[in-house]
Image (cartoon, rainbow, N blue to C red; front, side):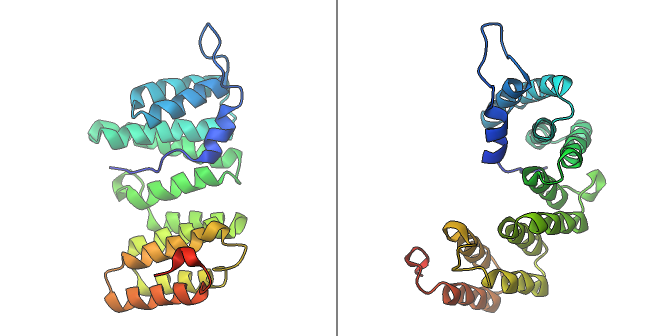
Length: 220
C-alpha cells in the first residue's frame, strides 16, 4: 500500500538522546521512540507500534514522538495491506500531521506526509495537490530539500512542463555550495534517467552535466 523511506537521520538523532535503557526497561519517551525506530528497521512493526504508543502516552506534545508514531502505523499498514489496515493508515497520517502542527519546521514529518499523499490511494487520503503543497512548504525552509521534494511530485505525475520547471530551478544551484555533496545533481540525473520520454531524458541529462562540468563524480 505504502512505501515509506527509512526513518531519517534527523529523527534518529532526536530520538537517541536519553535512549539508554535502565535495568527496569525503557527509561523515558526518547528511549521508547528509539526502540520504535529500531523495530521499524528490523521490520517488526507490531513492536514499533507498541513502543511508539508508549512514548506518545508519556510525551504527546513532542513532534519527533508523533512522527515516529505516524511512521510506525503507516509502516504496519504497508506491510499488511488489507481493509483492516485503513484504521492504521488514518491513525498514522493523523500522527504525522500532529508532528507538523507541533513543529512546522519538522521537515522529516513533512517529507513523510508528502510520501503518504503521493503513494496512498484517494480513498484513504492520497492527494497529489496536498503533496505539492508539502513540497513547497519544505522548499520555503530548505531550498535543496524542497527541490528534491518538488522533483518527487513532478516525476510521480510525469507532467513534462512541471518537470522542466523543477529542473530550471535546480540548474541555478547545481555546481554551487548550495548543492551539498552534489546531492541535487545526482538526484536530478537519476530522475532524468527514469523518464520514459527519450528526448526529454537526453535533454535533461545533458543540462545537468553542462551545469556541473568540473565535477568528476558526475562524469558520464
